[in-house]
Image (cartoon, rainbow, N blue to C red; front, side, top):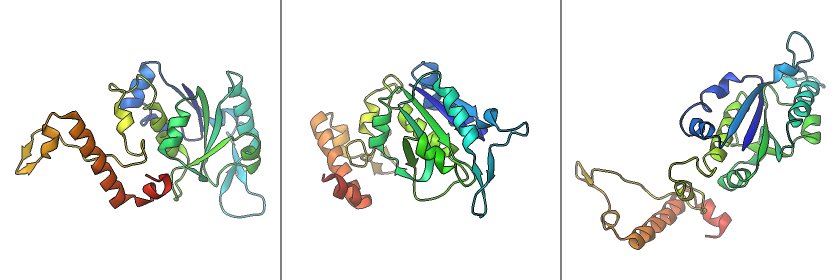
Length: 228
């Protein structure tokens, strides 16, 4: 999979994409992430990519020209399955969407900044708008890194144990069950006996019951929406 990211602050993406699982995915050649400084396509030698908004009001808006030039040039290397804009008023990102995007080949992510991007770019080029929650950040860089991480870890071969992602929270519409590791008894705090039984079916049943209970307690909305 190849992902291009357009941003005016590429430094914000350095660390999230250069360590741990994302680093491993790229080293294995399973994921390529290229971060592009939007100012490469600036309208003047001062690196301008934003301007005041029509109608007045506080905050600058990212301009049409730099964004369109960047999109058109990057498209010359291949068509995108989606051109994604990270925005608070986009569709709420979830595991189901991460699964779907992980099956695609090429994505372009536009990171908004300031007051966002000119609406005409959204109308003409953007095919998917994503939000990570009902709050506002300084820009779309950190949300973009989260989306890339959620997608990248699902690619076959990225995780050492490929079945691991199948048991993450939300994969089956439920939260993940509690997990334990050694020692079996720590300061009198004991691991549930069923997990020490060596009986796969009993363990699987217990985990499902715990997932269902945890979801009922913490996220009952998931049960309502998915009909579990």
